[in-house]
Image 1 (tube, rainbow, N blue to C red):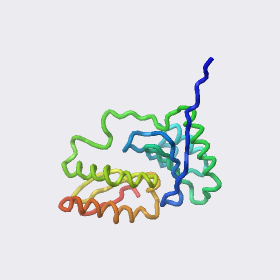
Image 2 (tube, rainbow, N blue to C red):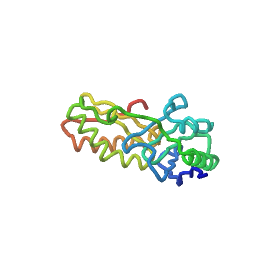
Image 3 (cartoon, one colour):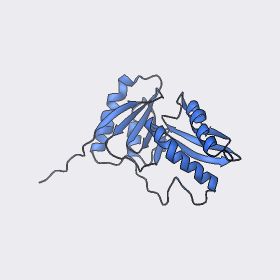
Image 4 (cartoon, helix red, strand yellow):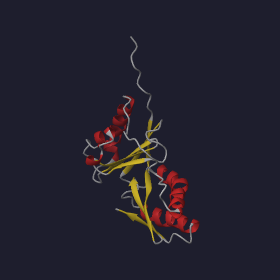
Length: 194
């Protein structure tokens, strides 16, 4: 009788600007490109059994899943050397079992809405094309929240949430890019829910 083979899972870890976050990169996609899932606590993990399991580790403070990586934010009083191998091994074992990291279905594209104004469509396009890839490299995401009277509000997720350099990223990076590309529309960028 043939036995089901385990899926080969390779994981490497990457540090990022947030000293309390570590990015666990795997060799296949965990979520559709451009879609991310942020779990600030165990109660928010209803669609991710992997995130729910990671919160069983007392040191885990936040879990973020996007494209081919999981970013774990630890509690400040714990050192990475104490937990990183346990977390990596747990993620590897979970994914080798063939279970999905996230169970989510969308009726429509969660990034774009046909009711968006032309300015909002442009802002979302710039965030998706220029900002998202760079921020994902650091294990996080910055997601459009709203636009009103020249102010763009974004949500900081993953390693960006609570990161010491997130203000620099927000003002020197995102705000400069949006005000340069849309000078008549965008005046400021603010983080929502920080």
